[in-house]
Length: 91
Image (cartoon, rainbow, N blue to C red; front, side):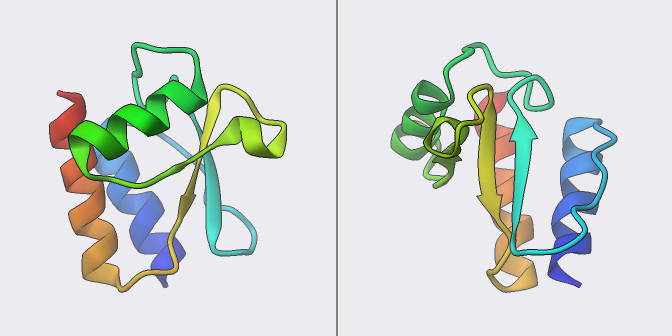
């Protein structure tokens, strides 16, 4: 349920068409889907935490540069709130 809420909300807010991961509590999302101005996942994550108050994990830590790892293990409303905060920050 949380996975569906996260991906559906992300797709709506970012005008994306991400597929739902088969399992786990995480999604690797490409920086291009976030329309990020940087190509560095580390830089993106630092900026979103420092200026947008949204915590993410750089894909580089998992050998996936150009991606950001999101957890959707939080409560459904927290997921929506975080994605809205991220979308507002990136505007």
